[in-house]
Image 1 (cartoon, rainbow, N blue to C red):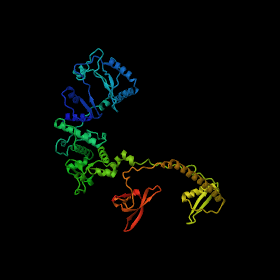
Image 2 (image 1 turned 30 degrees about the horizontal axis):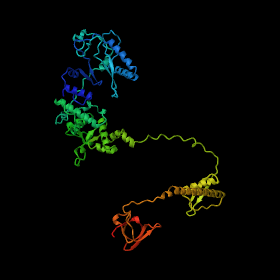
Image 3 (image 1 turned 90 degrees about the vertical axis):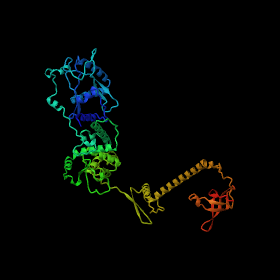
Image 4 (image 1 turned 120 degrees about the horizontal axis):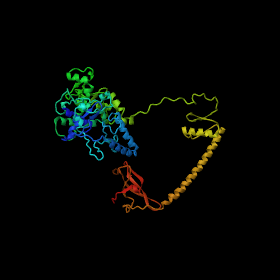
Length: 565
């Protein structure tokens, strides 16, 4: 890959553009990659201000910038938050040495001033405000001759006669900002052809930051588009559609694994390439596959399993890509624990200290924390309350025990009471009944307490009986008034069988709700049962049951006539 291709690749990635820009023959499109340099130390682009050839501004723009600054400040006074954001941006640029503070002098020809204004994007969350410098500003009643391609006129003269412009930056700071030579990116030939090479591979980690991605699928998609972009630059072909298939995603995964193995296992890889035995990880029995990947082998070579399961790819324990693999497999098993996640991972990958790596990632899983997380640890046990370690009172309190004995089983039940009063005994008796049940017969030694309690129980039962009697009378009155009087109306049967008349000798089928209709028995009506109103509402029927004639009584609604006669 040429230097221009490498520059285009870096520009593509730093701008986070997933498409391929069309080539243009304009001066601007040709000048940008030539005049722009990227400082890998500082992590930003560096570009000199271009000037148009033979032009120089007639003034340094101080008065115009001062006037526009006053108007800008007046507008920002109405929005204190926006004014603070505007000021914070300039302070940050001063700290990063992007801009430099100079002495304010209207007639100082060493400096030229550019007005600025703010561009607000409400749809942006992080960069809502952006400050733009107006390089094409015009002085009042003058045409602007300020341009940015060829620079001022003195640049065409020898450097010895250039004007001297002192700087406030010291030598050490200037040395740290010196543009470093960008690293050369080596690309394996297998990215654009079917050939395999173990000696060179794409160092994808130097181009893409895997820690910026929270999803393995998204990382594979972006990597696949990057590889397609490299293929276009390599073959000088037209841009194709940005459509990825399974082959592209698998190729992106192989590129990442190869790059990670090259950086994480350099000694093992070099020994495998040279044919030496890897002693340090001899238990894994490493070998280099045809794709250039370090794989593990074991005792499953004769098993009826796919090759990727018998020989998984080796991955390091601590790496962002390994964490993405674990998170992806953990989501695939529906957050089903460490063992299931590790088993699915080992179908394709062998992570060094895999269980430890899976545990570390699963500790950060919010879903698992919600359903399986443990509460905060129990704090240290508190001191005893003042009542417990304090010496108890020496006052003696007299108590009594109420003894209940079962006359049948001789079981004992003890209740502690405070005195021998009837209310105290009744409370103990209620506790006894609640625990053991209400006895059918009570016998006592006729003590005063028991006699008084018996009187209280009798009065209580009398009051309860009177209450129940009054409650029953009230219920009967309400039943007669609200329900019984509403039974005057007769229900009229509008059924289609109103002309059927039941009579003796009819052959009927006995209806049984809990039996299938095919199992209903045949019977013969031998007697009709009529009421006081002369209507037949039941009948006696005869049926054969176990070789024996039986006569039973059934209501007419459970007799189904066969209408044989």
